[in-house]
Length: 111
Ligand SMILES: Nc1ncnc2c1ncn2[C@@H]1O[C@H](COP(=O)(O)OP(=O)(O)O)[C@@H](O)[C@H]1O
Ligand SMILES: [Mg+2]
Image (cartoon, rainbow, N blue to C red):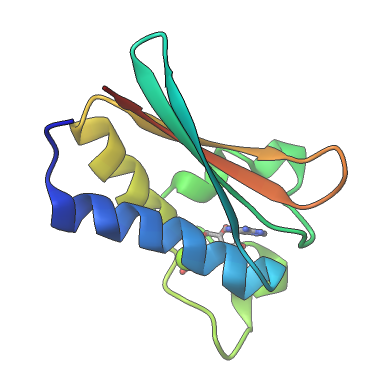
C-alpha cells in the first residue's frame, strides 16, 4: 500500500504500547486483504475498557480512572493520534472487549 511509514509506525506503536501498559503483553494478527482492507488486530489479556467508554477513550487527554494515577501513565493522546493517522490513510481503528477478556484494537487500512 502507499502510506507514510513513520506515521503508520507511530499509530501501531501507540496501540502496542497500550496493550503492554494495560494488558502486560501484546498479540498482533495481520489479516490478508479482504473487501479492499487489510486489518491488524492488537490484542491483550488485560482488564479491557467499560463498554460505555470504548469510543470516549479516543478523545484527546481522555484517560480512565484506573489508569489516571499510574506512574507509567501517558498523556491520553495515544489513541487520538493513532486514529488521526489511520483515518488520514483512509482507514480507522476501533476498540472492542474480547469475549475471553482483554481488549482488541482493530486497525484497518485500504489496500
Ligand atoms: N489495551 C488497553 N486496555 C485497557 N485500557 C486501555 C487500553 N488502551 C487504552 N486504554 C485506556 O484508554 C486510555 C486512553 O489511551 P491513550 O489515548 O493511549 O492514552 P494513554 O495511554 O496515554 O493514557 C488509557 O488511559 C486507558 O485508560
Ligand atoms: Mg497510550
